[in-house]
Image 1 (cartoon, rainbow, N blue to C red):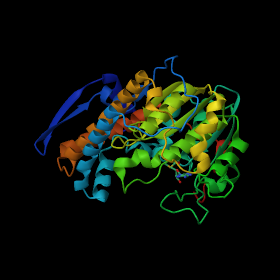
Image 2: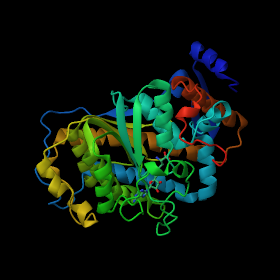
Image 3: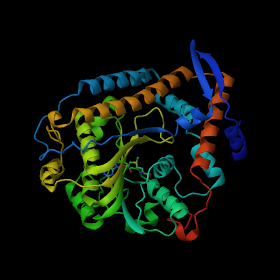
Image 4: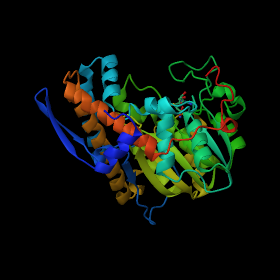
Length: 427
Ligand SMILES: C[S@@+](CC[C@H](N)C(=O)[O-])C[C@H]1O[C@@H](n2cnc3c(N)ncnc32)[C@H](O)[C@@H]1O
């Protein structure tokens, strides 16, 4: 077992690969305890290659959705893989995957040595995004907007990142989310955690109706009014799809669309956008990805190590906003204005270049393979009592956590002046 960061360094220097094979339920499991095996968890990345010939159509939402056969086959394969989980009791399965996930010791390891505000798994995910890509604008002062943000760990991660790396940069932030103080919001939809919100209320905007519901066009307009010109937008929205997990992508699409429209409307030129997505199998997501690829200079898809490897969550990192022809905006915004997705899709398939579709296929397959591999491994490991295997799982988690702390230089304490939560008594 790794005892300290010094052990990590020793192990790091040795670059040993130790291969362990175990037989569980008659299936051989291979544990490769090498430097690469740890690094692999930090390198789940895909980058789109821009083609100058990609052009946005001049109008949107005039055609019916279609299916891309190759993407639908992947969706069926992923759902079949996830379908194997129906045999397990949910609580027991969640406990098991929490134990086996390589990232599950990161928060505990950081907490032991550092006092960080609102340190959660989400904090770790966004902190990793900040290290992996140049998301922070290269200016002396900038504003950011954080959509669907309760309880606010992305803000806390950005605050910590800026205080360590850019202590002189002046930063103004605003955030919006389903209002935890509004009784009309369903407890199933929102995160009732106001540890940050209650200390920073003036930075939160809950819209014209005070719900904070981003799906309402008037709430979007209010955000545009007060946040126009920000240089960074994050959007981490998700909704519970437990009742129909096979159609997660479709169920969250309207919220994602509202996040994208808001980001594109408020971002200043050269601004950056980080959007949480799940899978990319549907025509509607293909269109959103095409829009982002045409509107930004660079688009990357990243699954942080701290994101549970058995789920479909990924972050789309869009850098350097170029904007697009304003004529498109009137029809692009129509579903938002009407408050519903309707029967149409953003762009017809015929107007999305085939070399772009191929890149989406490649990206979708890359992340689907990683997810299925993890699910299958978790199934094999379920209820194992083999002490050697349990030891290997714990060792990998310790190494991943130690690597996280070292790689991302989590060393500093936040000065009192930089704290978002001025008093720690109640948080
Ligand atoms: C995964 S959490 C965000 C976590 C956050 N980034 C953090 O780091 O603490 C997703 C958030 O989306 C919010 N949300 C879901 N539907 C929303 C909607 N229609 N409008 C605004 N926020 C929404 C939820 O209330 C929840 O706070």
